[in-house]
Each structure stands twice: as structure tokens, then as C-alpha cells.
Length: 87
Image 1 (cartoon, rainbow, N blue to C red):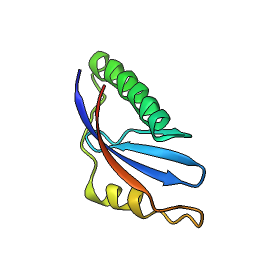
Image 2 (image 1 turned 180 degrees about the vertical axis):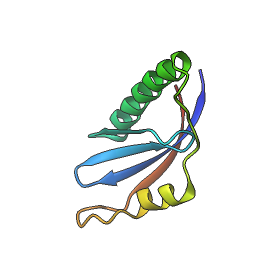
Image 3 (image 1 turned 45 degrees about the horizontal axis):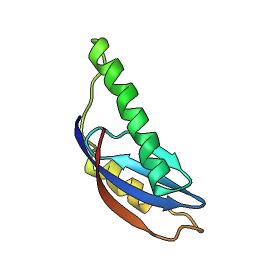
Image 4 (image 1 turned 30 degrees about the vertical axis):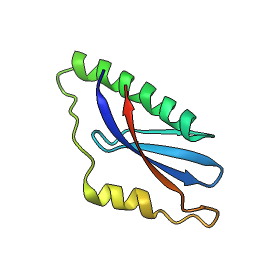
């Protein structure tokens, strides 16, 4: 089991989760659902990463994080959460 740092962002009617260690995302109607989708993405990516030679992973660049946090959305409630996730 690995530890990941996740930022959750409310966007319109759904939540988006972003993993800082690898840039993967998940989306759901609740924070928990967004994290569950992110865990599925991390597990799928890990399987491919371990079985393929030409797949790489890198931490999220600060510019990408800034873009994620500043996406303009007229209905956004500007709610952010930072959580730790084990996948």
C-alpha cells in the first residue's frame, strides 16, 4: 500500500481529486467518490507501469497544480481540501 497526497476541488456539481505524486485525477459527486475513482486510476496505472517499459511517472509540476486550483468556474464554490490517501 502506498501513500499519496490528494487535493480535492469542488467544480460545478462534482468533485475532482488530483494526486500530487503522479498527476492522476478522479471525479465524483462527493469527495469520497472522487477519491475512490482516483484510487482506481492509481491501481490501473500501477499495473501498467509495472508491466510496460515505456511508461513513466513524475510528480505534478507546480504550474499544473496552479492551473488545477485556478480554473475559473462561475458556479464554483472555491472549496478545496487536502487529504492523504492510501492506495
